Every structure is written in C-alpha cells, then in structure tokens.
Length: 307
Length: 258
Image 1 (spheres, each protein chain N blue to C red):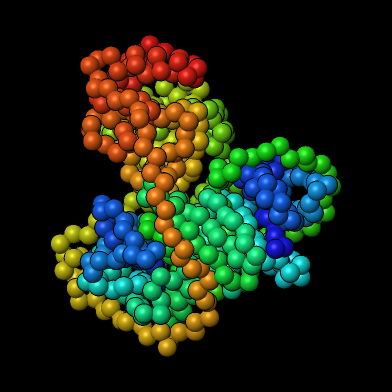
Image 2 (image 1 turned 135 degrees about the vertical axis):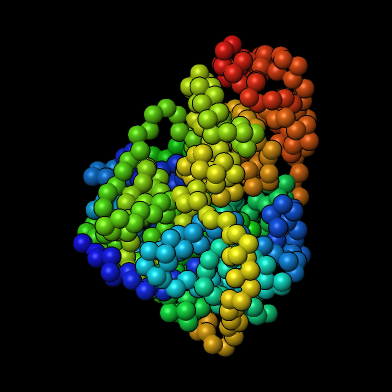
C-alpha cells in the first residue's frame, strides 16, 4: 500500500508526532514517502531510506489551503492509498481539506492501525481508555489522523537529502496581521518529565498560583482540565484530555481533578499518577498510583514549603 | 484595509450539535453512540454561537442554527435558539445515521448554502464524536477561507480573529466570507434569561429534506468491535490527616522524580 506521511518541522528537525508515525511505519515495514510542511530555511528533515519533499511556506501562518492543493496533486499523481498525519492544528486542517478533495472521510484520533491487504483497521480509545474501538476503513484512499504519543519514537537518521517545493502564498484569502510566538519558558506539556494539572477542585483562578509555584519547584509543565479551560482559567493550548493534548510524563500530579473519562484519555498512560482530591469516590483514584483524599488547597502549599 | 461596512447584514450559519447528556456515560449500540430522544446542546457549540451573536449585534447579521442528526425533543436546538439565534435549519434522515465526518460536512455545507450563509461558524470538535475536521471540510466544500482554532474576536476598526497555533497565536482579519472554528474559553457564552427562553419557542425550525441537497460523500468506515482493556490499577489511597504532603514527597523520592 503506497503511503504518504504528512509531517511538520519543529526546531530544525521533524516534529515528535512525525517521528512517532515514522517509527510505526518502519516497524511494520510499510513503504512510505514524506511531505514536510514548514517555513525554516535549512531543516534537517531528509533521509536516505524514504523520499522527502519539503513544502516550504513563506510564514508559519496556519492558513494552508494552498499547501493542501499541492499535496492533493501529489496523492493523485503518485497513486497514494494511505495518507497519515499527526493530530495537530496543521495536521487536522490539512487532513480535513484533503478528505474533501479525495472524497474519503478521515479516521480521527487513531491510536494504532494495522494493514491487511487493501483494508486498514484502526484503533480508537474510548471510555477514557477503558475500551478500544476498531474500525475497518474501506475506501481506496484512506486518511488517518494519529493522536500524538501513540507510538514510541525511535531514532531516525536525518540528513539534507530532500527536495524543496516553495509555496509563496499559503492562502491569499486570509490577511494575516500578526504572528505571535509565545515565549516558552520552562518545560512544555508534551515533553516534560513531570506534569501538574489543575481541575475545578482548585476552586478559584487565583489558586492557580499554587500550581505555578509547585511546577517551578519540580521543574514541571502545567496542564488543566477542559472545565477550567472553558472557564477561562487557562488557554486551550494547556488542555489535557480528549479534545486537548495527550501527555505521558514520568509523573502526573492531578490537583482537584475528578477524572472524567474525557480527561483520562489524555493522561492515563503517564508512568506514575498522583491524585489529590477531596472526593473519595472521584474516578481519578481508580487510575492513580498514589491517591491522597484531602483538600488540595491545604496540601499543595505544604508540599511547596517542604520540597 | 477591510471596511466594516462589508460585513453589514451578513448571514451567518452556526452549527449546533445535539449530543447525549455529557453527565451520563456514553453507551454504544453496535458501534454507534446510543442517542436518547432528549439530547442537549453540545457545550462546545456555545462558543461558536457566542461569536455569531456578537457579530449579529454589531452588524445586524442574521444567525441561522444548522444541525444534523436525530431531532428527538429538539432540546439542544431550542437551547441554541434561546441564546439568541434567529431560526434553525435541521435535517434528520435514516441515510445519515452514523455518518462519518465527510458525510456530516457534506450535508452541513448544503444546509449552509440554503441559509445563504456568508460566514459559517463551528466549535473546534464535538464532545461526542470529536473528529475535529468538520469545519475544515465544510470550508473546502464551500470553497471558503478556513479560519480554524479561533480563541478571540476583537471588533474595532476591523474584525480581528486570534487563532491558537502550536507556537503561540496568530491574528487575522476576518474575511467577509469564511468558515470559522472557535475553541473553548476565548469568548464567554451568554446565558439566556426567561424572556429569551420564551422567545425561542416561536422561532422557526425548518426541517430540510435530504433530496434537497447535493450529497456525494460516502460511508468508508465499518465498525469491527469494541474491546475492553480495563487496566485495574492497584494504587495506594490515603486520607489526608495533615501528612498527605509527606506521602507525596516520599513517593517522588522513591521513584527518583526528585
């Protein structure tokens, strides 16, 4: 099955999500080509073991309908039957555009897949990770949007062996005013060894100062539940769970989080889970390695003081 | 510079999905989410509806709620109308049950056309199916610019939308014809008062027939099975008696996290 992976550049190399999917493809000896979207000048994204096309855009602007046009052409001319992308902002936009061009509905949030002749069986995680949902994709062209952290990345030797396709204007119909790159101070959610997450049990947005202090003591990244993101306490980019990010740190500390299945999907595979919650019956305790039943707002300040 | 007059009297279609009450655990029936007669408005859609209503107030826009799926008691549709939308265009057809994302977006695109929408607004992903690609697909079907992951709207000399990106954010001028997806938390969805709730009852809810739409997307996904992989954890649980923090510190040391 001729496959095409849609990858992204991150800090001069391939993004973690891209590398994870490459690992899976290589492990299963599936042949594939790679198209990589980015704006960096000379990234190290080439390879001697697969074909790499660098679609170089003129800015990091998120408007990518023009890029999708180019990829659609390539899929048709190369006779591609399997298209893979990581479930990022860029990956979702591109896959959505391509699915209309190719008249093939994508399977979203894929955590695993298997190729059997002309059929692909995908796995999705449901019930907060308690069950797996299997689907056969039967269309000629199949598009899979893969959740980050689904596969263990292996080391891939990268070099400058790639061809570049420059796109001057990603999307002329959208007038970009300003691109703001957030200053990333401290550990990031996706790759931090420790993640501290806050939920409704923090009671008030002001109490997040405890989470910040604890995070800086432990050199941890900070996440939150959908409930507190919806309440405007934290930006969407920090949401952990079904509709947010997936994290797999060595230690996950859930503060005042009841542990709805939608949240568990994004963190249950953390190596060690510590949960602090007032409610003894909170579902988070079912997946916690260490559960403390008590008032988060009294425990965390003591924790900070004694670390 | 885009003049604000260009947006006057625009028509907006805003998607409202009816989903099973999220407080109740989702159950499956042959691989499909079981849908009771009474479903509620997906909270995710409240953010898109709020953006639509802010545009309505400023530019005298007409806001049409569009929805596909089992209608049932229409509680979720009513909730969307109560927030302040003008009317609703809905569709329910056996051929559309358990649609994949492309079938859904194909149908919603057709309904947006019937609503003569200049701007089509969505949440970023529904809370039950969460495919997260319908807004992008609709923009492609309608050949409109796609402004996805909007987390803020600022109506000043221009309409500026702030988009969430992987590295930060991006501000764009809202095209006068486009598809927008709105993330949670950027805007504060309004709560209807008693008057709004009463007013919604007399708003028009028109049912669209499938035959009125151009429908080319196909089902390409067959349900195989659901397997339970329940992983019972034998974690420790302690009631805090003032010493909870020491248990955490000891454990962090034990696993060499500190």
